[in-house]
Image (tube, rainbow, N blue to C red; front, top):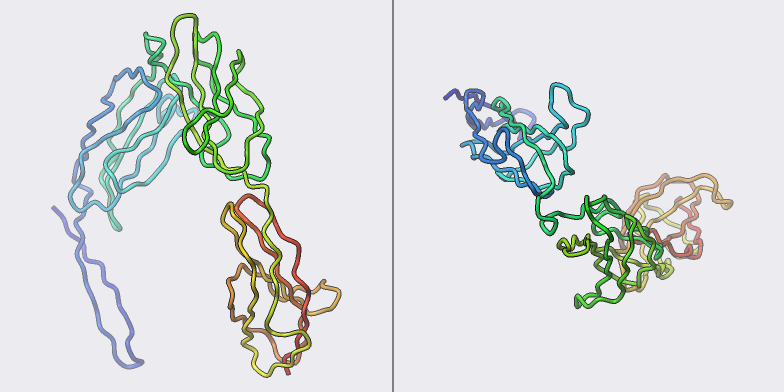
Length: 309
C-alpha cells in the first residue's frame, strides 16, 4: 500500500520553527466492498439500509444515490459524506443506482456501485406511508399546519393522529386524500399517518413538530448607561432578560451612529456581557431585541446613548 506524507509547519517565534509530520495511507489502490443492497436487488420497503465494509485508514465515506442510474441520472437523490459504514434513507418506488467510496484527507478509493429497485410489497400491511411535509422536528410559530404524504397504492383511506408527550392520542382524523390542515397545540407534538383498505392497514409513519407562539420577553439594556461617556473603544454591553418556556432564544444588539437609527454601525447575535470594539470620537445609540427558533421576536429594548471620547 502506498503512503504519502503531509507536513504541517508551525511558527513558534520569528526566528524559530518546528516541523511535524504525520503519515496517512494512500487509499487509491484499495477496494471497497458493498454488503447491501447488492446489484439487481428488489426491495419491498421504502426504508433502505445501505451497508458496506470499512476500509482501514479511511476517515469518511461518500455515498451517492441516483435515479435511475448515474449514466442517465434524472436526479441525484442523495449525496452525503459520513464516518459510519451504513446509511438509511426512505425512497419511493423506482429504479436506483448507488455508489460509495472510502476517503481520507489526501486520497480516496474508486467508487463501487450497484443498481436496485424499490417495489411495492405484495402484502399491503408491509407498505409504508412516506411523509412529505412538514419536515421532522419543525419549530414554528404558526399552529395551522398542512400535513402531506405520498399515495400508497391500494389504500382506501388514511388515518392521521396527533400524540402528546405521553403518546396519548389527542386528535384523530380519517380521510381519502394525502393532505390535511390541522391546528396543533402549543409545545411538541408527534403526528403520524397510516394507510388503510377494507381489510388491512400499514404501520404508522411518525414525525414531530414544535409550536411556539410565545414571543421572548423584552431585553432590558443596562450598560453602558444612558448618556455615559467612555474613553475605551472596547465597550462592554450588558443587559437582562427572563427566558420564556419554549424554543431556544437569543439576543441581537443594534448599534447606530445617529439618533434617527439609520446609520447602522454594527448588528450581532450576542450574549450578556459582550465586548464590542467601536470607533473613538463618536456618539452611539444602541438597543437589543430577542428572537427564538420559532421566528418570534420581542419588542426592542429602550434605546440608550453613549459617547466614546
